[in-house]
Length: 276
Image 1 (spheres, helix red, strand yellow):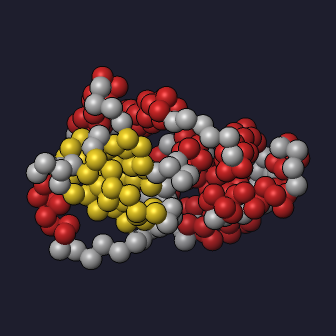
Image 2 (cartoon, one colour):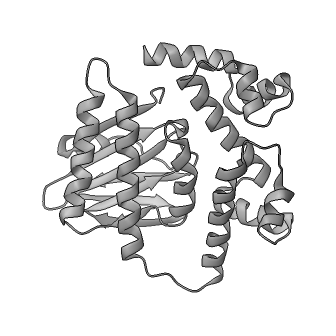
């Protein structure tokens, strides 16, 4: 996907088309949220395959291997599919990685809250099809959508006292700290000290949840914000690198290209073409 944001409906006709395609487990370079209004989804993710009947929420983080097969329930299928790049809502996306680890699918009640979720989707869709859509409006609506979903998730989830819960909580606390300090030139030991644990154990937890080391996660968070600043501001490349804790512009450019395949200048040019 080359767009920063995309939202569309998936219905009965799309189910029939999808059935003839070879749908193997795969990963993608964007975040994906599926909201099931009618129908069902057979979702293989986190090495398990489960069928969920609507209404449901399914969130797939960038890079996670999965296979989603929408299907009919009582002859109906009606889904909202939302895809967006990580830098579109950088303040939120890393928290989503933690919230939805091993819990990509959430069953919902067909109540007033669910109706409000659908209203937000309608508003995002209407804005996205305008001749000149306002991405700021869509960003705020998407943030509100995830806030409401997280509220429902907390209500319905009974927390189990287990080692897995402790690991998840530690990782969430790491991400909270990361949001506060990612612009500083700090490494894994800094965050491990803040969490009163060894760098080795923090790395083990990070590898278990995101399949990335702490250093890779820090770099990724910096990269997401760098993309955001390159897209939404007129800051120079040097200013952005310095703001994100890189002491040398050449090293910032090297890391950015290694992670994204483009230099910061090339990425900015590509984004200007997409937005215009």
